[in-house]
Length: 113
Image 1 (cartoon, rainbow, N blue to C red):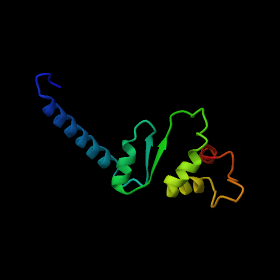
Image 2: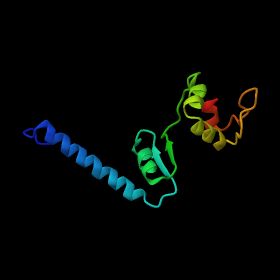
Image 3: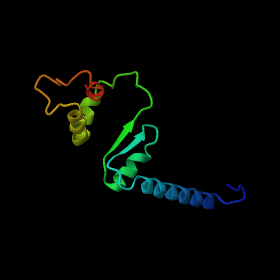
Image 4: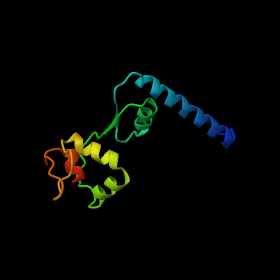
């Protein structure tokens, strides 16, 4: 950007670039049945949302730590639909009375467990 431009002009130009980028992302994903995006590029979620299709965030590496102890309870309380979709992705239809009996080899459930 030109340093002689006012901050207002620079902000308008930046917003215009973002809108053009967003349109390009949506155009590139037209007709997709699912949008898969890098965990560090969360614009993919917004693209999928605007297209009305599911999305999946992936990580380029294994996350070497367990979820915080309260994570499972909090995500189940705040986002019950997401929680059960993640559980069902690993074959868990309903949580048994004694806790999750999901396959421990499934990293999704292992992360939530």
